[in-house]
Length: 496
Image (cartoon, rainbow, N blue to C red):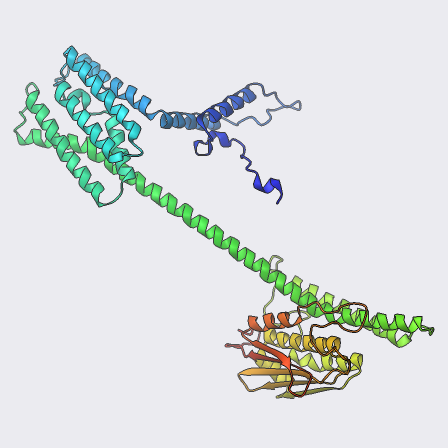
């Protein structure tokens, strides 16, 4: 196989997408190379910028991707800084606004809380592998920080929110809801204990219903809201994965259908080429050999042989013309060319007498044709497709008789009982020794058998629900029997 189809080639700007990055270092190198290329890029000599991004949308999207990649790669470091900044920032905000709060600002408490929130951020290192364990550890450390430093500066901790969100996004099922409910209750109990340890100046007290409701709402906002967001994100992710899987499956089925259609088209083309050209080419080669032999014997060219060669060439050309016209008519990619029903150049069983007359003239042997009922009525019963199939079967059987059993008489019988057509083509024993076996070589310098005749007949019949039997006769010779059922629903233009 060509290496161009096996070697992986990255698409332009594929390094900007973190999903396709081989490694962070490779991504950084690609980004630096892209920035250098943009800085050293020169304008086109005819004016205007060449390959320069239009507007700031591309730069903004690239910045967003780089920021997202950096946050996803360094989530522990980012959360470590965010936890400490959120806690210290909340303390500073409470002091500057002189709001009533329960924050404990002793030095040892501040240090202890900073250590606890730092350890909570470090636990996020196991977030992907142990989401539930990381969530439990994060809440325990957060509860400890609440009981030491007060609830007011620690209600919003980025690391805790991320742990709850990630657990809800990664662990679907019934246990997720139960775990979230338990965690909300535990958080409410800790917040209520914090209010009991450090009562708010002028507050209603931790025993009052108003304080209980406030604590429960805080617990719901801190734990349940990120859990709901994580569950919503999980649904979106699962839906996207199902859509991607469905698209992949549809693409695979479409590829299989395309391959089957191509294979069917090739088989049909092979059948048409074989049926159109095989018999005439065999006749031309045989007649050419006979003409060459007569010339070598000392006599002049036989005008009768030359006329026969010319006639066979004309029939071959006409067959190719009919095949090309039919393929052109059946092409659905060309507007107003495909029409149902009888195709241009398509044969019918009513033309079988012409086949038998041609075989009798070319092979110089007697041919007997019997049919019941009339061929026109049989053609109407079969419809265009099955009628054409019957014609091709008779044509191929006569061609095989002429090639493999020259000089023998042929009998063609067509019997239609109203539900199916029984078609028989039988020949007598060949007077030429060794030439009565179908598929063998004929007398001449070439092997004129392509080996596709019987297989092609069987394929044609199978396509319309028919069957084929071939074999030697009891009294000598060979017989071809084909059964074609009538179409289930016959109309004036189609055959069902």
